[in-house]
Image (cartoon, rainbow, N blue to C red; front, side, top):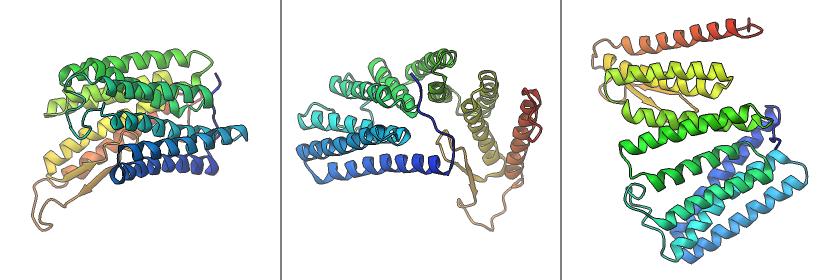
Length: 315
């Protein structure tokens, strides 16, 4: 199965941005409808939005706009899963989704069916539209289904997540060796997030734990370089920045806020936690920690550039 791909240009960027914006707006709109209508009304609106998005996806595919079709298909999958959940909620079959322990307390058959509908819908959409981003949705929904089926939270949930990550990694490496390599990217992303999330459950408290996280980040660099997949380098860099944030805040008492979104590892440093005129010991240590981290990234980049064939002299 050939993946739908286009060169990264201004047009493709705007297409992706527009498609993801539509997905976010659809989810927000359905959230509004769920609060303004009863269960039956919410199911109707979810079905209507699903039908409109599916129609747009097929219309775009039939006119040759395959990326646009895939982006509409992505939103269609989300709308379909919400529609299924809305119908089950209408019948009174779903547990209270406002309960923060709904995924770690007991067996909920109809919730599992809803999660399975996400797996099936993303698989069907992937088959129809051949859009690589749907691979990530398929992997994520499969993880959620297996997680909810076999886990009640705690350490076992983290172990299960790591095991799923390893399965995804093996699957990604298998795809990489075949004619469908373009689909492997998002399998690698899902594998890296699952492995990293499971490991962070065990290593996120003291100094030693965060040093282990940095070492794991370097391991991600090695995996990414070996497999030729930059997603591992992005996730590894995010982990190392988390370690830098931990020590920067510890040594300089500097408020360090990271956006915990794996693909956007930006650090925001501010002094909003106290008096601006208050003297804090070793305030230089926070910025210095990040400066050293940046130099480490550059040194690794130079090393990888020299080892590449042909060498990347512009780095």
